[in-house]
Image (cartoon, rainbow, N blue to C red; front, side, top):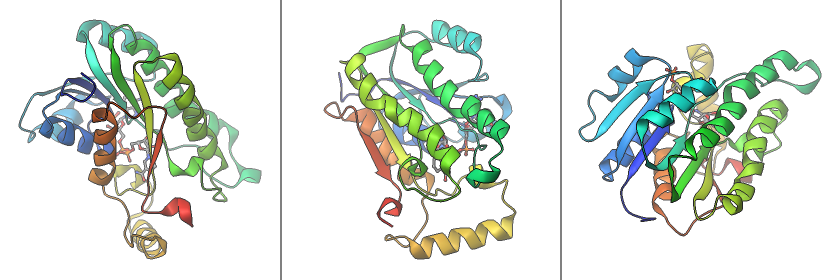
Length: 239
Ligand SMILES: NC(=O)c1ccc[n+]([C@@H]2O[C@H](COP(=O)([O-])OP(=O)(O)OC[C@H]3O[C@@H](n4cnc5c(N)ncnc54)[C@H](OP(=O)(O)O)[C@@H]3O)[C@@H](O)[C@H]2O)c1
C-alpha cells in the first residue's frame, strides 16, 4: 500500500508548511489528523478544508501527551513532522547556548520522540517524513546552531530508513519559506530580507508553503523512496 491513500498524522498542521501539507494530502485522498498546541488555531486554520481532516491539540515536546495521542488514534500509515522551534541562530562566538538548548528541545527532541511514540501504531511499510532545514547543509555563517539541530535529524534519516524498513524514512530540507515562522522579525526587515534573498536565488523567489508541501506529498506517496533528504530550497544549496 506504499503509494495509495491512507491515514496520515501531520505535526504542526495548523500553520505554514504543515498546514499546506494537510491541504495537499487531503486533496490527494488521505485522511489527515493535524496536530499543534493551540486548539483554536487548529480549528481556524483547517475550517475551509473540504475532506477527511480532524485535529488534536497537545504539546509535541511532552512524551506522555504523544503516547496518549498515538494510543487513541489507532493505526496510521504515514507520519509527517513539521513542528518547529525558532531558537538556536546567531554567530558562534556569541551563540547563546541556552537558546541553542531550547532549539534542540523545540525541534530535535520532539521529532525523535514523535517517531518513537508513533512506531507501535505506524503501519509497517508506511512512512515518516521529517522537515529539516537547508541550514544543515549550506555552511552559512550565523547558522551553526540551526545546522546542528537540523543536521542531527538528517543524520538519523538513512539509519532509520534501514532500521525501520520496510517503513520508509525521509526528510524535506526547505530553504526560506514565507510562513509565520518568520513573524518574530519586524515586518519591514522581513520584507527586505525576503526581497534580497529572492534576488540571489536561482529561482528568483522565496518559497511558499505549498512548494514544500508538494515535496512532502511526493515522499509520502512514493513507495520507492527511502533514506532521502530532498532539498526544496529554490537552489539555495547551490550558492
Ligand atoms: N519557514 C521556513 O523558512 C523554514 C525553513 C527551513 C525549515 N523550516 C522548518 O519547517 C518546519 C515547519 O516550519 P513552518 O515555517 O511551517 O513553521 P510555523 O508556520 O511556525 O508552524 C509551526 C507549526 O508547529 C506547531 N508547533 C510548534 N511547536 C509545537 C509543539 N511543541 N507541539 C506541537 N506543535 C507545535 C505550531 O502550532 P502551535 O503554535 O499551535 O503549537 C504550528 O502548527 C519547521 O521544522 C521549520 O524548522 C522552515
